Image 1: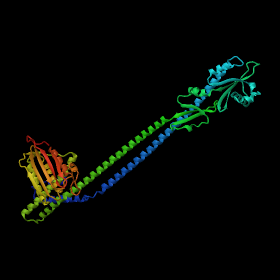
Image 2: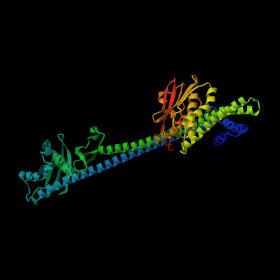
Image 3: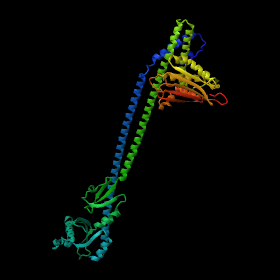
Length: 558
């Protein structure tokens, strides 16, 4: 493009045959480049292939992320469940151990109190103690319910059968059974238990040696106070780590009363004494379950957040890819549009230049007219090339303007003159109203030609039916007002601001690169001016440019 611009912008003072030869070379180069571009409206296969590849990669990445998330979630859930099970098993084992220790300590305390009671009895230096003495001893040992002596000779008495209807007779019967089961050695503490009239009884006895040769050997027989053991001795012996410890019947099933899923029952039966009992403790696992649920929620939340961030990243990457794809497509279409726009002036230039080269025209006036057409098309070609080069410079931030003080009315009139044939050729009625009293103004002549040329070219493109364009240049107070009006298709209200954005096109039916109005706005802003558009859909548009005039007539610094 730069080479083309250099050739076209050569000094117009060269001979006509020189220009014709140069333009023929230009046309051949651009025509060959144009053939390499895809036809208008057809997408490029390479873009589609790359887009499909990127899309497949994103889909694969998304599926991979979802699978990884599911795998990590499953592993995390299994780990938390397994750890919760281990913690629960450890809690149950610890609870069982504590209950076993409680039973052992309770049995030890009971036997300890029995031994103390036996020692108190042994310290009495009498053969047979009276009831008051036994009551006093029993009072000192609250774990003992009943205490009495039983002579050995009464084990086989004639009245034994009738005494069995009482608790003492029942105890004597069991004492005899114990004696028959195994001989009772002196000073050996032994126990037996059973049920009398639906009442559970735990008893103990010891064989006391006779105090003298004449004395009768006796058994010290006693029963335990089970209520005292339940209400007093058990709380004193219980471990603080256990809660809700109770003594129940040995055949009682704790799970029958289990209504809370956070509660676990552990038990341990009594071994040496109280074989009809077992100690039951209730373990509260609610804190453990709450901690497990909290860990699960935290773990799940972290996974969801990571998954959301990854999906969000994929979404933004996909959006960026779509934006790049759209930008690439727009650039491709812009090149295609520019190529097609270059064809029109180059075709005319070639046609008229070939006509002149072959000498088919002999009238000087017509030859001059052909030269005028070639010059006009060169100006249009120059504008297209300048637009492309300036747009590239603006994108790179390298665009510079050369301001110089001059007559802006004359510059506008010259641009209108160069476009007059082109407007007339396309059947447009053009009205120009230029204020000749405008003072000298500092501006960039190339940029001003670009502003006017792009606005006129834009008005021509979007005026397919009523072909009438008006241009006015007036001064209002300290401002210079430039207006270009047409009676074309107009602009929708929501698109009034978007028309100045790069690559924006009102209609796909009209050829164009979509950069002309963005170049106009950039040039206007470089002159410290402003641009706005008034439009009504179906009735045409009016672009209004305002340039501030310096009060002291000094040049505007670029």
